[in-house]
Length: 116
Image 1: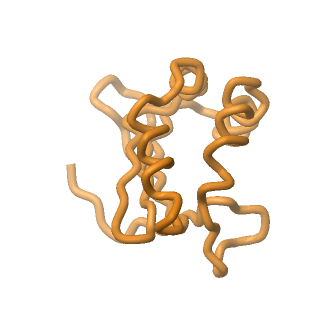
Image 2: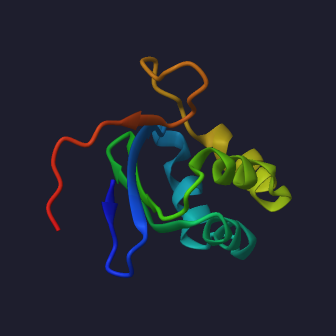
């Protein structure tokens, strides 16, 4: 964990998930016009600088968490009705990786280098 310029602790999180080729167009279309309520829930729960990249059939996400109770904020996002509806649309387009940890949807990957 590092500290941001405004003094808040920043937890950087990267994760991956599969995206079958037949779902690529729909997935990218949804994310090209992400729902305002989903974006508001992320912000309310201290998620900043969130990006998703695609490399072939693999999605890579990166986000920065600036709160002080990650588990509670992730539970708050999961409890948000608009986010739940969003997930009901986009999650079926994804393909979780076989080597993900128990309970993971996106597989969190370790940071091995960082420079500010």
